[in-house]
Length: 80
Image (cartoon, rainbow, N blue to C red; front, side, top):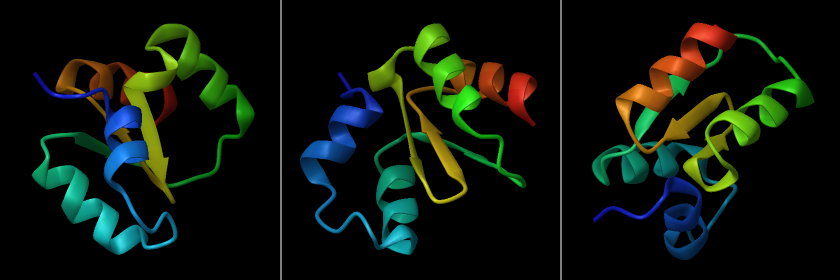
C-alpha cells in the first residue's frame, strides 16, 4: 500500500528546495501531479485539507501532488 503523499514526501525527500528532482521522484512513486498556472492563496490549502485531508496532498512550487487521480481531478475541477 502506498503512503499518503505528504508522509512519503516528509520521509523520503532529502532536499526540499530541489523542485526538479521532486517531480521525477514523486511521479515515479505513483503520485498524481496537477500543475497550477496562477497563485490562488491560502484558501486553496484550507479547501484541500478540509476536503481531502492534510496528508493526501503536497506541493512543490506550482505543482500539487495527490495520492490518486480522483483527488487530483476533484482539486483541478475546483481550482483550475
